Image (cartoon, rainbow, N blue to C red; front, side, top):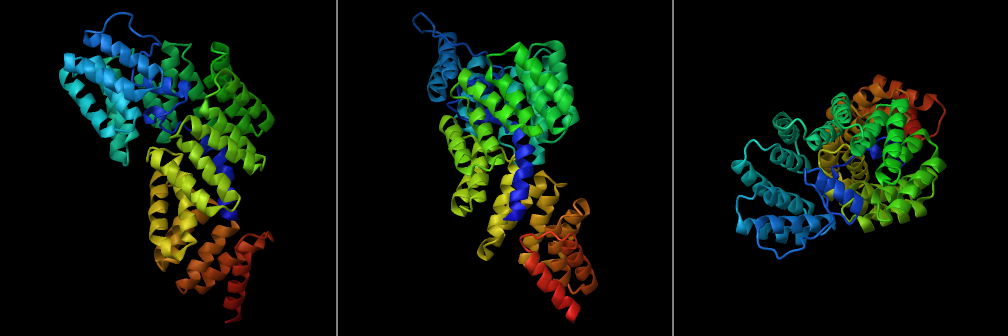
Length: 454
């Protein structure tokens, strides 16, 4: 549990800053929903046609109106009526792709996007929509590459399609290609200096890259551009959260809710603040508020899992993590601590080691250089009696965090099982040398004593 809490603290400050693929997540959060539809290149307008509906364009506009009101199912009905009148009405095909994906039907959404592409193969908006669907449905590096190719194609066909550049930047962020993300966001800002989404999201990328000054600069510009937009205030709050200025962070997140009471991202971030203040009950309340407005908010479910785990409520923690996995894009970096924590929980139950291994392998695939992930994977191999494989990953973890006593103990235990007595003694002594007690320190002492007495 101590190892998981340390990992939770780290992920609170890092992974929660990522955009977790909200482009294809149904939500009642008005602000997030509008941004999600705009990511398709749809011009969301809050109006209804004021005449009798009889053309595809009329039904298309009504579909857009439903999208702006956060009702994708009604929007789908209108787009389908438009297509019935004109099967080749490309805007309605794109709109239908967007509304279906927001409802969670990614496969059918892709069918309509491909149909639109056959009609207008050189339409950048269609390639952008297909890129979104590849990204939202990605379970492999190849699918991420397909998303990247679609966004690049959209940009090559329409250099003014800034939403495609933003989507490409989001994709690069999730792939940890931070230089690529920064390049795309900066290209958007160069073309459109008042683009709020680009500045707010660029701020997050700088923050993850530990360039605090540039992160603060971009977030402050975002607030100047749109002081009444919760996205801008949220970006500034995240800077304070990263800097450990929890009260200032909470103040900015609460300002978001005054501007938009249904802004689920602010509830999630307030929950993170309460976790860092060790107020788990309040954190749980805020995470629940977040998912009440956005029923498929993966980061909020992840927060619930962390908060429940910290309270020792394992059953509830597992439920939170499972819900997060259900709705998060498999490729998103935010999924890494979810898979890792769930793997560690399962590893404590000997009858769930296969499930634990599957979760740990997914985390490793997404974050191959994360030492906590390597340690979890190695420890699961240890518990499965696969000591050679365990040593490989535990050595990797220790090489990146040589002062971590838990990792040293795990490696020592694996060496012992492999019959490498001297190596085991060295690692166990290292794990205990700092004089700091850790969760498994008594086990380490007993094993070291046994090895030295033989």
